[in-house]
Image (tube, rainbow, N blue to C red; front, side, top):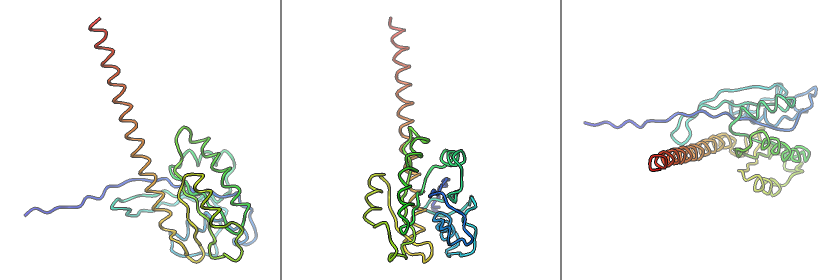
Length: 215
């Protein structure tokens, strides 16, 4: 009898959550750090009121995505990094989630400048990116429409989600999983490009050798 074992491949994904620089308030709710709230919701499946959302943290989480075991390193910048730290985080990361608060237009307007910095640091590579509007449960206080978020995501050529770290509204888990999928797709494309480039160089070298021999 022959038994077939389904082999699950393994991969690694470095995820960075970026949001506007936060001001520390006497209560964590006043700081409104979107990145920290989403990461905590994903890891614990709960909304935790009492935590310091201004502390940078790195989390390690393993999940099976499309029959592939993925180890995620999730960097929550908490919007507190200085310019040098931020650039270091951007160089380290492979996939990025730009988060804004739908009740705060200022946070939405800072998305594009963050993307421009990412492009400058990661060039000539294209950036693997997802745009997320948090606090979807506070629709009555909305300052940024869903259509505006969709339009910006189209301009950035990335996926777009609205969700709520507080209530769990929206598929927060899917945000993390889709980012890992995008990182994996990007690696595959880059791998094929490198192989084609290597093959071209080999062919050119052989042609040069043949030319010298025949001359």
